[in-house]
Image (cartoon, rainbow, N blue to C red; front, side):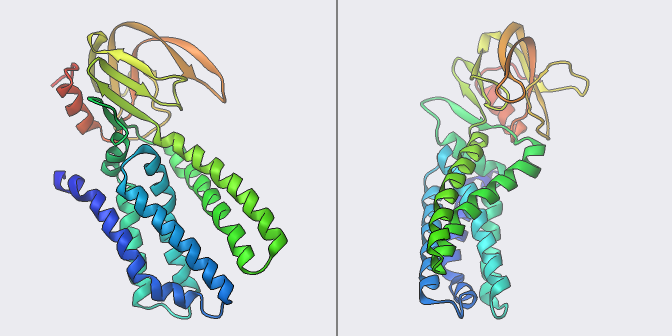
Length: 293
């Protein structure tokens, strides 16, 4: 697994670069019969998207994580669309689908996410991503991604077919929708745990109104939670192994409720769900937090 984690980003980078090489015939076949303006716009949009994806893959940052989650799956959708609308399905279509699928799986993997989240760390801190809530991952996330992609391509597509008036309106509305969708998805990229010399910080805009520091000396233990635990649930409904942080004394937490409502809750134990619980516990032990054997 360590080797997979080490070379995982390069799997995404190489497959994304390969997509540009193998997808040309597939895209060209799909554009057969289109006007020269439509072909030019299509190639321009694809080139801009591919370049944005490559830059985001080369710069491990939290903002880049949001970008790759938007662009790389869109590359897979574009490969599927080209294959479906072309005159026939050939080797280029299958190659494009394969390389785009590999890139998409790679950027959605938990070790890729951790590398990009930790890329925004400062000094001696180490950032660990939290698991995406199950309900959001199954509903709101794909719908928001769809809004971003459709908003980005609808206007240019209409302009390419010389629908000038509606194309301009769609471009403006699409830009606003894409920006909103990207900012919404970026909130999920900003959910993390931070291991610092002073202790552990929980940074989760979905559960807490502000980041919460748990000083190392105040941490009694951190480890897997029991199924009947009565600790304060800050997992936001995420699946996977839930960890419990026990404190030596209760603290006040500003917890988010429905909408923008917040509530101050006193808690001596909290529950949370790292994307990769095992590696997180190893890091916690290395940062001298009390992790039961």
